[in-house]
Length: 568
Picture 1: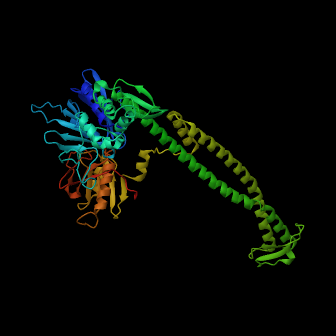
Picture 2: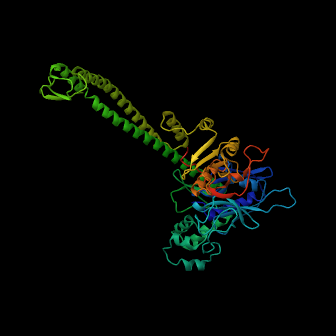
Picture 3: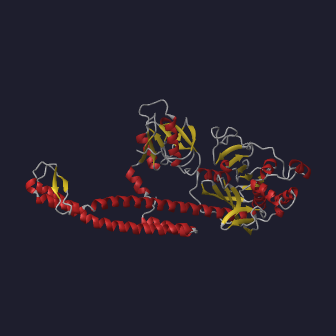
């Protein structure tokens, strides 16, 4: 079962019981869509996970956070506004899969700042994490920027007023009476889709569970059994497994999976944590297997190409006796051959048939030299024949090794064993490591990164604060375009404009903005704001720290961090 409205209702209850009044001590990022919040209540510390993953969006308490990655712009933004703030309210908005956590920021000033709210929308590929100012519902920042090109119903952008997603007209599951229910679902062949389409808060899994239970009791009674779990005091959180595959984290036994095994937990958060840990492990295992399979397939194809080439060489090598005979025949008939002939027809004394052979000659060589040429071909072919046979035997041995690895990959089910195989593949040369000596690479490429846009403009990117200063002092001209990630540490980017054009083509601007976003501390974010202005409006004031500038007349682009393929 995915993280549906019922799961969110139960998690919201658990969060209210444990996190209200707590202080946000730390926010870190587990991956590009998942954030971990460290909440303190006196001496006690709890961790809370929030994910806007397109498939596994969810929220729940957890024992400890997963290993974090380098902080993104959005994680830093959340920390800036929420760190040391107090959680004052936690609520589910209606029956939607939307969680709202209100935080009162800490301030030493007499006038307290307005409360902020994290709004997490768990809606598949439309999942998002949004920070708003609660006084006017103005969006301060969000993980995924949604403009009119993405959605014509609702824009989710900094500065816009937050509004709920389009609502569906469905019945409240807790207010639904038996008479109305019976009137709606009169027929005996009610489908889960009809329940799902009419009643709010039901996921496909819950609707299917009602239908499954209705096989042994009345539909209304089956509905009541499922709806009872909307009361946190009536739930029995559990993880359902089919063999070793996780099926669902559920607040109740699921009759639709009669052969599943189950493990019970004290809280819905524990069940969800175990479920998504199992899902992550399964996906990581599948991903590792896919990587190893691809490496084996690539290696097998390489062996096949080598074997084909060697077989062709072997076929030529098997003609070594022909070369010797042709040389002997030329020597035995030197008096019949003159220089300048392109071929000669001679009787083959080495064959019982005594047939006539047509032997090609090099007209620029003497008959004796032509004979020596064939003897050299014979010697080379004879020597190559044994080497080719040896190499073919080695290829057969390599193929056996690949076959044994193939069996290991398919039979291995633990991630640890797959990781060991991955290391062996690297050692054997089947896989390459992507680690580089970054410092050596940058030294070899010079003080700036250089790119050429699709429109032919040269783009320069600073490597560090000193390099950024050099860009402004040595490279940039007044009519060049300057770009930098908005209020985020990162590289300065210059678009050279030697023709002093009054504007820069938008494709080039977007490419340069993507570079500015990529070479900033926000490069893990989905979208990053990037300011751009003419270089003449960028000023490095005397005494400023290296890399720091002031600029005016700027405009802002929101882009996804990326590096163009056309690097100079």
